[in-house]
Length: 115
Length: 111
Image (cartoon, rainbow over all chains, first blue to last red; front, top):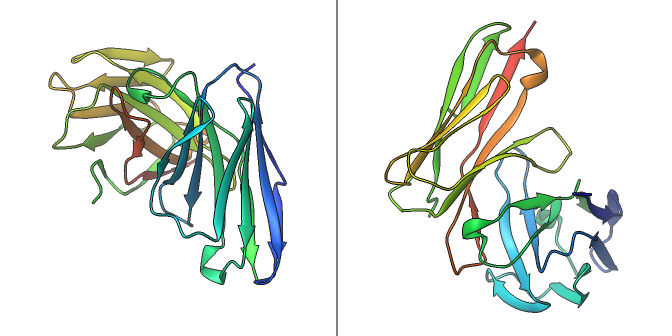
């Protein structure tokens, strides 16, 4: 099983809404990632959790708040987003942090539209 | 700063043609991964190369890691319409949690 499951697949939210994106994996991976991908661009790293601790925050605005409740789950809480935050949000996981010698598996993504 | 540059950026070819995509950097990576992504979907891992000079084959796809581990190439033989997609290389380094993506190559194969 190399599956990373993201929900919801599509999300439309207003600028005053609060919503959450969810990601789940049952591969025993100990590193989990959030990426943001705009149309026709490569994925951009947002956050990395390694062994359930936040190890990297790529200077992401505080309106994005990650959470890792346990080693299988990763959430991204959204609040007061802007229309320019509309994008495909990708979750990924890898066996351990330190991806120098491991592989990352991606979910199908959540297509977020902020109106 | 984009550390991994891919070329070409776009490629539009006929079914049956061969092609090569390049992924170049001035930095050394401990591993290079190649992904293919279709519209609205997440990237799907194709291969990981970890040793300088390593060559891996996956059916009609051949991947090579440069001797100095700064560059990689993907060669597709007899391309098919099902090969259409966005090809992404991604580099990893030991003792970091970052996976750095290349700029991407968008491939379109026409029947």
